[in-house]
Picture (spheres, rainbow, N blue to C red):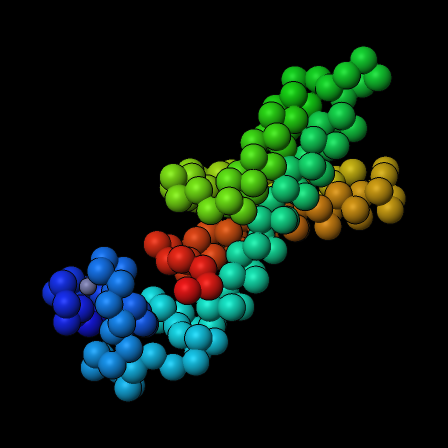
Length: 177
Ligand SMILES: [Zn+2]
């Protein structure tokens, strides 16, 4: 932490301008190293990856939420009969729509949904595990189709886990500052 020389507010080590009064704080001494360095080298929260990489991953994960949401919507119709989705189908359909909305919310960086996203990520991992068990059982009957479902399930599990991780890495932090 550093202290703004103008307004005396506490700022993160990596700040270059004060977020409260816009004073340039580049020359304020900070605990580690001397002054802010190359933006690529700024590592808030002690993370191991530079900012740019974190945000590329963040937006890739947003896209994956929307994609897996769409895949779930499609899966809901596949699960159903010709007359439309059955009960489980509707459940998956609702989850797919919800997932796509979460993806859009993450993309727009709606801070309010962050708490919710952790819960939904956990549900997504469960959904992925369920699909995985299901598709492994059906693999014999479905052949190559079953393999696609296995891959889809694995993607859901990975996206759920990656989302929890990226949220902790980007917590309360603005992009491209
Ligand atoms: Zn200030």
